[in-house]
Length: 294
Length: 235
Ligand SMILES: Nc1ncnc2c1ncn2[C@@H]1O[C@H](COP(=O)(O)OP(=O)(O)OP(=O)(O)O)[C@@H](O)[C@H]1O
Ligand SMILES: [Mg+2]
Image (cartoon, rainbow over all chains, first blue to last red; front, side, top):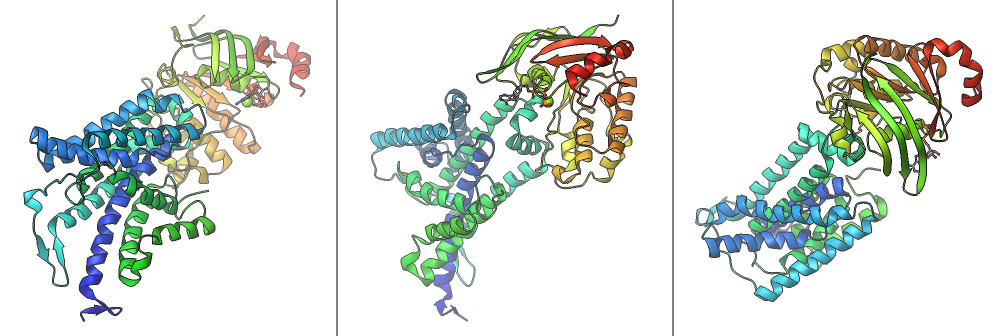
């Protein structure tokens, strides 16, 4: 009973847990990308940098203002989301009349600038962010040891993902968002301030990235390049799930995290590439992605 | 003579480089049903889109309830109490029938209640839980596109080709709806290809050609205008 498919159950469960943790980040980040892409039709290449800003935000709040992790969970997404609002208002909104390529180039350039500034200021070495004391330690579940903080991240990400999905699918605000995703001009002709909705949607997607950054701070080192390495995988997740699909982003995020974790158990050599292999296969068989329409 | 709720004068409009309206002038008084007739490409849809601020650029004057709207953002124009039913119907596939129906926000007082709307369009009541608005038949989608602007308190309705491609019984049903709406005091601009549908409903007619109003006449003058209409509309 202490083996599963010939693998020690502890190792199996351990990797499953790591997969779920990574999946939480993939899901949160690709959810933000999907929300933004749906309404703005822009692939937000700044997303990784905004995730990194979230982690740094938590670090600054703690070390400069003495505001702990729980404060950071609320304050940082609002602050970083506000920078997103500024970016949309003063830069992205000027580009909607042009080809989408320009939005992509702008967000890519912004990512390089933001990461460059942080690297200049803080170097490439990671800064430590200590775990909130309430979530130190862990529980022995019998078949494995679950660190409390990791359990928290998985649970909280799930709640945020499901909450976002409910917001979009079940509320009036979400109905405006879905309708404007299909036909923004018509929604505006009904009297809805669509430009403002677009601004706030971008801010919301950015806030999700920042929240993921706060979640990440105690697990990974807080460093300027933490976003750029993660975001490549997240883009693959988005391609697999299908651009713009909210539910698709969440399910593929968690699913691919788990697949990646289990690959580490069964065939460790492929664990870094398995997501890209899946992406290639999906692109060949179903180019619109698993949950994409068309 | 009752008050003018819509006054368009010297309206020019462009889509990018292409200049499609060349000085449109017309006015609609409270409670009137007025048609914009004309051949394909005459500029009727563009006129309605210009009123809503949905063209690339427009100049001239469009006064709605005494407010000049030529420089206004689309979402503000709607709040002057306009309901727009576009030629392509624009039912949302990611919204259920009922979500489509209740989507447009309030833009004025005295909109119809959901029950009154379902009474006017019984089919929609039956199909209200359909998950995708676009799963409705063409006729039902047309009814939905009209029904959703009756709830909002809009008193000026811009209806673009609401009978296009529909079976005769449905066209008749829509005709009865227009009569009821007129009785309720709605002001209606009807863009129509189907003159036989529009003729008995309207108080006055405007004929467009090449992005201008070419002719206008009251319903009572119709018998003396048939030869001219044949020429303009090719009917
Ligand atoms: N999006 C657009 N871009 C460029 N030109 C357009 C666009 N929409 C319409 N036009 C042009 O503007 C002119 C007027 O078109 P409009 O749609 O207003 O005509 P209409 O009277 O509604 O005719 P119908 O609906 O029967 O085709 C036409 O010459 C048409 O080709
Ligand atoms: Mg037309």
